[in-house]
Amino acid sequence: MSFGMKLIRLHHANAVLFLVLSVTGFILFSSSFRSTLPTFRVWIKDIHVWIGILFCVPLLLYIPKIKKHLNTLSKKKEHRVNLYIVLSVVTVLIITGLQLTFHRQFPPIVSSVSLFFHDAATWFGVPYATYHSITRSKWFKRLTASKTVSQPQEEPMMISEENPIYRRRTFLKILSGSIIAVVFLPSFLKWIKPFLPEDTGSGEQALTDVNKLKPLPNPSPKSAPPVGGGRRGEFRYYTVTEIPEINNDNFSLAIDGLVDRKIKWNWNQFVNVHRDVQVSDFHCVTGWSVYDVTWEGIPLKKLLQEAGVKENAKYVKFYSADGVYTDTLTIDQAMMDDIMVAVLIDGKLISQNNGGPVRLIVPKMYAYKSVKWLNRIELIEKEHVGYWEKRGYDKNAWVKSI
Ligand SMILES: Nc1nc2c(c(=O)[nH]1)N[C@H]1C(S)=C(S)[C@@H](COP(=O)(O)O)O[C@H]1N2
Ligand SMILES: [Mo]
Image: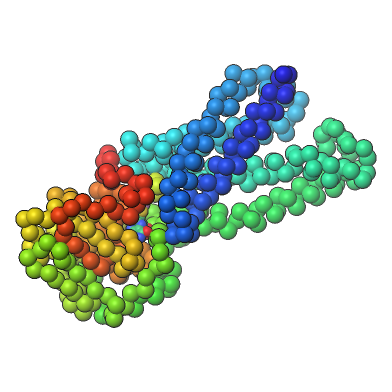
């Protein structure tokens, strides 16, 4: 096989793999697939990682040939620039992808940075690759050449600007570029928004909130203004069900099971329970984090002490008002000081999207432990496997500290 043929085959193999990576990547990025296909999501992640590793094989075969390839392109500036762009994007994707795959070996800040660059390279790379594959495809060339002259084999550059083929080609290139931009723009804007300086996040949250609870809890002076200075970073709102709407009529929080005194609060009682304030970080296992969140709520430890944990209780199980999501901690874990049944975030009632009015937070563990719309805490003897753990997440949820 000639050198050119080999390169073309490598290129095609990579194009197919890149397509699979893009599709699986967008499914992972999109929050809507969380509720429709939760189990599927864990597989998609595995497929994405394995295809990503497979994607490196043709590239490794290519590395020794880069020099030769560049030499053959010495007269084609456009192609050389394309090659540099593609190689840079792919390098960023592979390095950050590997880091994210082995994120447990790193502190979360490293994953945050990787995730940013992985996303950024995707938002640039996928539209670029789409544009590239359209404008370099055989049918595009045929489409732009057919009726005028017989198949121009060479570059459009060689045709003078007055030539109708050149104009038609330029027009179709601009058209393809614009269509691609329009298709990708909404998701791109959604991704970039939290990184823009004017975005405060919380304002919009309050508007869309449909939880109607009265009275509103009175924030402690440490919460408003937040002692942590206000959170840095954005939550990505996750749910595996419809988001439950919680109001005075359907709110309750119970602590029961293997306890000495079962307790059940309604909203009026619950807002009057004494709250503490703490500042902590929030880490999702998929790589994003929110730092310095000022939470106000009741330390879980205090609730457990108030209810009185029976001798035979081994685990604490948390239920969500969504009726589906649960998770557990061992009693020892549950006694950590910074676990909180949180009600306020940075001085405001936790929004509905964010798991409000009451959610659990377990700062030292990945946030799949931090059950949203918390409505029941049950002390049990036998181990319970949580929602995501049942679907492939690691039972060990400890975040590696710096
Ligand atoms: N009820 C419920 N709680 C949940 C989840 C969920 O889907 N449903 N997702 C968990 C995961 S994986 C994360 S990262 C955090 C996300 O919190 P956020 O949606 O407020 O950003 O909530 C956790 N608690
Ligand atoms: Mo998560």
